[in-house]
Length: 91
Image (tube, rainbow, N blue to C red; front, side, top):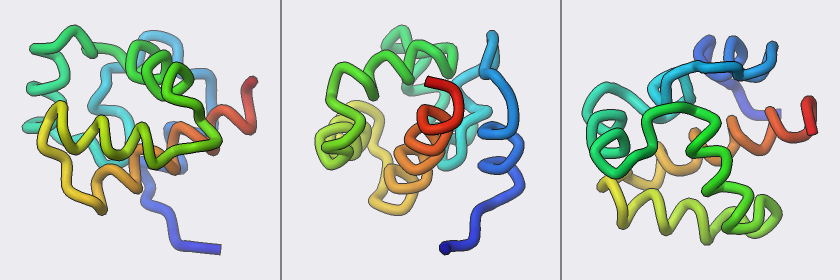
């Protein structure tokens, strides 16, 4: 299994509640600000986009993340993986 960051482990260990979008692995302050400008201020709002774009076909979400806020491939992978694992635990 791949090594995950502490940020990833913290996020997937509990319900997301009202966590900011920057609580997600791969989303720092710069990407977080860009997402917030588009209305994706909370992790649950980004989760909604992830689910709309089919969590099992995560390339759609990764491509959307790259296009919408300029995420690089690694950041998109980290965020997608974090949301996918959270869904496996809580949905």
